[in-house]
Length: 430
Image 1 (spheres, rainbow, N blue to C red):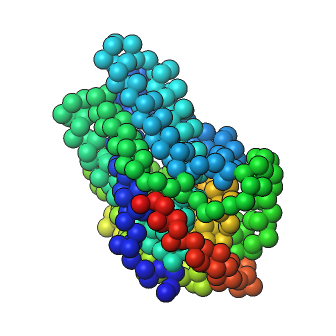
Image 2: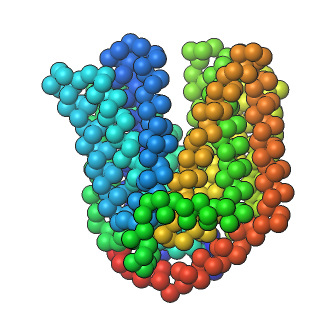
Image 3: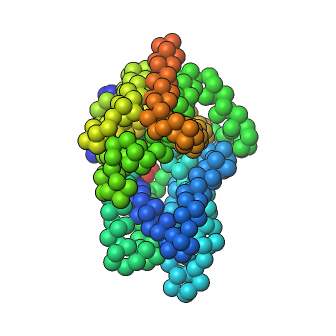
């Protein structure tokens, strides 16, 4: 059986767990719209509202290197369920404080920071949990399913948020996010599994620094992993430039008024492209295709950004952005899936968290660079630079992967390790 041909219908435990994750994703998508509204209504400050987004990224950069080893050494099930419970409890304090008339901007910031910190640890556990639940033969389908849920939440969530704000007010709408975390935890608590493979006692006794050293050695020793991470940084850097300048691009280059609903549709096109990537991923991914998929996706994305740089038509921009999001998300899921296939279970969370930190780290730098270039030149120049970075990343990845194993040997070794044990993991989860 190929690595992606198997249907998730044979994995009811995973589907139940992932659907619960989807519920919390939807709640978070609602809150991502509603919470900034609460901050703005409370302060009237655009700067303080924007600072809320920065708080969501900071904990990953600060605690990511700790969260990975903790998830590799500990009980991933408890980390995932506990993370949902902690985030739900923290978020619920906001509408409670509002009802009591004591809500402050300081509390909102503290809640955002602590909730994001809890997410770091549960997210690290998720990276390691998915392969243990489905096995290598269905890993691409599982990651595609999770990506579809995430993209769908980002499309539907803002719509629900707008309706809730109109019906019950911004602060009361936060109850939906809190409830989604508790609902996800309740469903996931019915799954009896630690979400990991059997391991020896030495892995448990190993310290955080030792785990990180082994994870770093693994990344350096696997040329495919290292190449995909470097290409991923270039990818995220250029992506930050494109997304950070999307509004001025729409206004200045294609003539859409700042208050025109078509700007929202451009952002919606990003969600549609990401959704398509999740839906199609299991059909296109094979470990042996990595040397073509990642470089091809990056080159395509670079070409589409070049089209945007030269374009002045709104319809062309809409189509190009949707395809751009599809290419970018495909490259992202390829990187995640390969790292999960190649890394041993006791390093999987650590390796993937390092990858996530590199990916997230590139976006703010790209956004800052794009802003600086557009200030001294213009938006098309910034987009042209982003296109070149993506093209160079794609071509560089193609050259490096030609002499790497392209995913075949590591994926085969991983499948052999799991052979005869995947069924035991599944049975324990039911």
